[in-house]
Image (cartoon, rainbow, N blue to C red; front, side, top):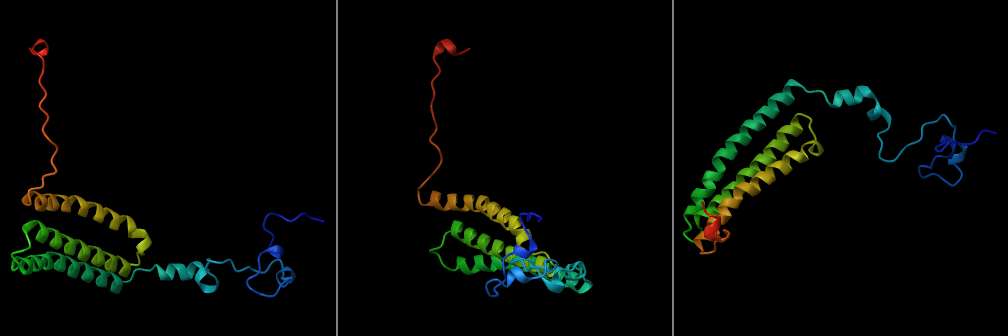
Length: 169
C-alpha cells in the first residue's frame, strides 16, 4: 500500500458536505480551496479579458485625471476665499484646510482614474502612503506658523558655548 503524501486529494477537507462524503470523492476530481477562484474565473482567458485596456477605459481615465487636476487647482482657492471672510481663522489654519482639501481631491481622483485603468487599490496603497507623508511635511510649516502667531515657538534654544582662550587660535 502506498503511503499518502502530505496533501492527498482523497483526504482533502470537505467543502461542507456530510461526514465521510469527502473520502468517497474521486482522487482526480478538483477540490474547492477557500479563497481561490473557481470555474471560468480561474482560466487564463478570463483573467486576460478582465485586464484588457480599452480605448474607452483610457479616455475615461484621462478625463477623470483632467477633472481631478482642475478641481485640485480651483477648490482650495475657493476654500481659502470662503475662510478669509471669517476673521477668527488665521492664515495657517486656512493654508492647512486648503492643503487637506487639495490632497483629498488628488487621492480620490487618482484612485478613480487608476481604477478605470484596471489598477486596484491594493497596488496603489504605497502611493497614498507617499502622498500622506508629503502632506505631513507640507502641513508642518503651516502648523508652525499658527503656533508662532500665538506666541508658542518650538524652535530649539540657542546654545552659547564659550571656548577657553587656550583652545582659540
